Image 1: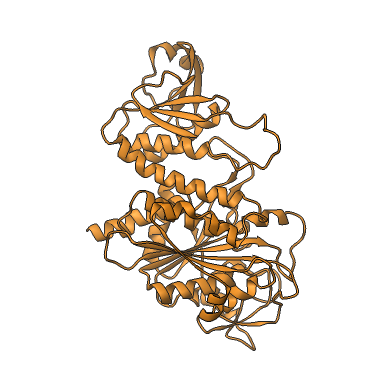
Image 2: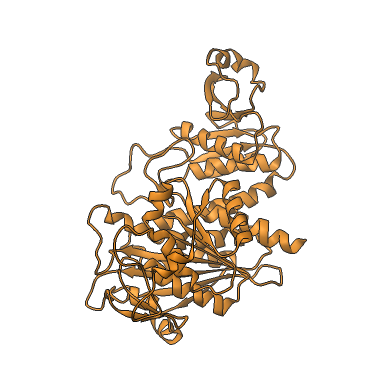
Length: 473
C-alpha cells in the first residue's frame, strides 16, 4: 500500500475517524451513531453513509494514546480493505498520534507475497491510504513510523517466502534494502566458518546442499559507544534432522527463520530513521536437512566458544546455531548488550499460547526495558524462569553440556535458555523465544493473517528508549 499525507482526500471513497469516549461526532453522522448506540468506546465502530461516501467512526476510549490510535488505524483497514482508496482523518491529533494511526493501518494492510498463477479474487483491494493532517511535524513523525513499517514488511515477506526460494543464500540476496539504507553486510561462508571454528553452526547445516552462513549487519550510528547486538536464529527449513519431525505441519518450518528476519527488519528500521545508536545483527543461517553428511544424536560438537556439546536431539538445532552466533558476537563485537530472537521451542507455546513471547535473561534492567518496549508497541513478552536446575539437567557424561535433556516432558524453553546463557558470559543478554507469535492463522481487526514480523517494532523501540536516550543524557 501507499500512504499520502495531505489536507484533504477527495479521491477516497471512505473516511475513518477516531472518536474518544463521549466525543462529538460530525453532525451528519450523529443520528446514525445514536441509533447504533455508538459513544466512542474503545474497539467499537459505526458505519455511516454521508456526502456520497462512507464514514467509519472508530471508538478510541476515554484516554486515547499512541497505541489506541494504532489499533484504530488497523481496524480501519480491516473494515475497509474491500475498497481501493480510503482516508484516515487525523485532524486534531498530535503528530505522534497521527503517525500511529497511519502505522496501524499500514501494518494491518500487509498482504503476503503471492505465488498464484491466477489473481486471487478474494484478495484485499486497498492500495492507497490518505492521512488527513496539517499539523506541524507530521512528516517527521511519519518518517520514523514509516521506517518501522518498512522493517516489519521486510521481516514478514522473508518469513512468508518458501524454503526453496529462501535458502541461506536466498535470504542474503534479499538483504539488499539494508545495503541501500547504509547497513554494511558481511557474509561468512563455509570456509570462513571452519576457520573461525563455528562447529555447532556447521554441524547443523552440513546435511544440506545449501551451506550455512553467518551474516553480520552493521549500522555505525553517530554515537561513540559499544553497539547493541541482535542475534537471530535463521533456520530456513527445519526437518528436525535425523530426529525427523512428524509430517503434519512440517510445512510451517519454513518460518523457522523468523528470528533472523526480525533482526534484519529492525536493522532496516534503524537505518531508515538514521538512528544515532550503533547497532549490529548476527544472523545464523542454515537448513537443518537430512543427508549423508547430517550430524547425529550422540555426536560431540566443538562450538566457537570452545565448549563441547553432546547432541541428544538434532531437532534442538536452533540453540546450537545460536550458541555459536552468540559467542561469536560477544567476542568479535564487544557489545553493550545482546538480544537474541528465535522460534526456539514448542513448550513456550504451551506456556504462553500465541499472544506473548517468552523472555529470559541475565540482566534485570535490560529485561525490564525489553518488556516495556514490547508493551508500548503491542509486542508482548512474559518473563520466564532460568533457575540453576535447568542448567544442571544438561550435564553430559562426555562433553561440557548436552543440547537438551534426555527424556520427554521436560520444560524445554527454560532449558534452552539455560543452554544459551552458557555462551554469553557476563554480557547483558535477553533471549526472546518467539515461537507461537511469529505468525497468525486468522486475521482480525488488529492483525492480518500470516507473518507478524514480531520483534521488529520491539527492537526499534528498545534502541530508541535505552540506547539513544541513554547517550543523549
